[in-house]
Amino acid sequence: MPSFNVVNYSLRPNKSIQRSLVFEGVRLLQKELHLEKLMYIGFGSIWFTDFQMAHKLLGVEDMISIEADPVGFRRALFNQPFKTVRVINGYSHDVFPSLLSDPNLACRPWLVWLDYDHALNEAIVEDVQTIIEKAPPNSILLVTIDAKGSGYGRPVERPKRLKGLLGSVVPDELDRRDCADGKLWSTIAELTWKFMVSVRLRFRDRGDFYRRFASSTGTGHRWLRLAVFSRPRAGFPQLRHLSVILCGQERWPN
Image (cartoon, rainbow, N blue to C red):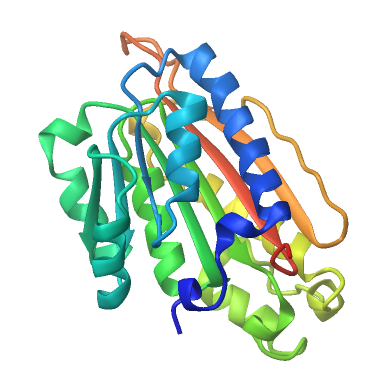
């Protein structure tokens, strides 16, 4: 069942606080990186709450919302908050290649919020890898995933599941105690971060890699991590940045 049939995210105070924190972080990056023509790409659903915040707090005009559900797509078209919002029907792993091949989009920085309402899976890994590999210069990537244990099988099964998703960054000797319900969220956060680093390092020809800054906040149920990748190698006329913000929680905020 699509999440918009379960809850109106715009009415969830904790979710609103999370969005405010994230967009405030992006606003600070926006000043530093001079992102005047930033484009916002996300999953606006039928409420477009994050799109309205991107417009209000960041001054973003051009926005693209990806909606896979046919009913949700029609409702999203009806609910578009601004004329400059384009709603595309399809799955993100099918939509991103077409967006990346559009020369009018590939020449400007993106703010991409992959705000998933389910556990990490192969499609999410593919999306993250695509954006890290191919996003335009100075783009910002935000990823939200559900880290609740039930989405990854029993604790004894979770190391194998994470290994299948994230590959060699998951140690062969990953202790299943690190995959217990109380620690799973932090384990997924760290391994997903390492996966992102490994993807970026495979594309060193796009520029050198370093972590500009990183922060974590957690109450045992949620974490937030922010980092920047840069391209300062000699021979490149400008810095290239890919900022990554991961937002995840053991339980979705109520």
